[in-house]
Image 1 (tube, rainbow, N blue to C red):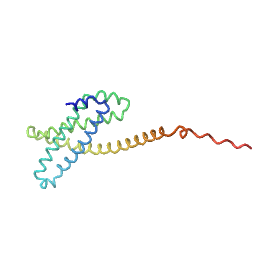
Image 2 (tube, rainbow, N blue to C red):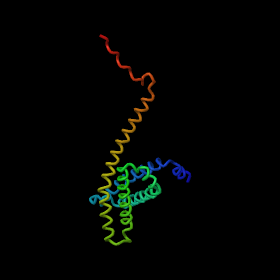
Image 3 (cartoon, rainbow, N blue to C red):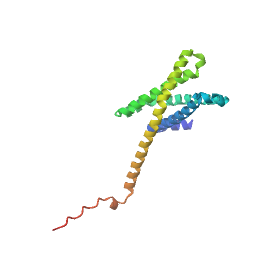
Image 4 (cartoon, rainbow, N blue to C red):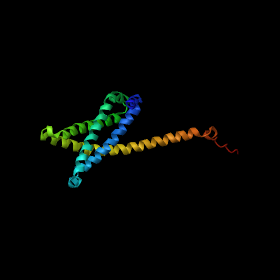
Length: 181
C-alpha cells in the first residue's frame, strides 16, 4: 500500500513517464505473443503452450486496460499541458483511439463464448487492423523518440561540460590586433 501512495505522490510528469514506459513494455509483449498466436503453421507444435500463451496475452491485455484506467484521471491535465503542441495532441488522440479499439475488440475476443459469432468476427477484424496500423506506428514512435532523447542527452552533456570549464577558458578570445602600416 505504501508503494501505491508513493506512486500517487510522484510528480505528474513522473507518473506520465511511468505509465508510458509500462505501456511500451506491455505493447511489446502483446505484440510478441500476438504474433506467435497468429502463426497458423506452428499451432500444432505449440500444443498446450499455446493455451498458456493465449492466457498470457489476455493478462497483458487486461494490464494494458488497467494502465488506460490509471491514465484516465490525468487526461485533462495532460491535454492542457500540450495545448500548444498540435502534433502531440494528434499523437495522443491517435494512441488513445488505438488503445481503446484494442481494448474493446480484445474484450470481445476474450468473451467470445458469450457473444454472437458476427460480433466476434468483426472484433477480430478490428483487432487485426489496429495491430497492422498500431505496431508499426509504435516502432516508429520508439525509434524517433529514442533519437530525440539521445539528442537531448547530448545537449545536456554539452551544457554541463560548458558550465564545468573554468571562467578563463569560457572567455571569448580577443580579436587579433590590426597590423599597423
